[in-house]
Image (cartoon, rainbow, N blue to C red; front, side):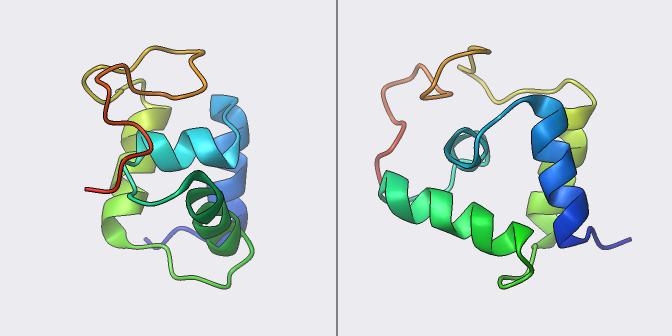
Length: 86
């Protein structure tokens, strides 16, 4: 079942993440302002929520985190790659 924009926002809020932290957890590439904008566009229904993003959000809500993740860190990842376009 496809996640709605509202469900994506609620999931992010349940996780206690701001849009930039969520973008970094999803390992989206780009400058911080662009990353935040992409998440906010998905939450506003202005951008499609892809299947991989839906699956990742389900995993995050079940407790899974990416390798190198440290909860509470603004950057999200501790591997030195956060915020770097790949």
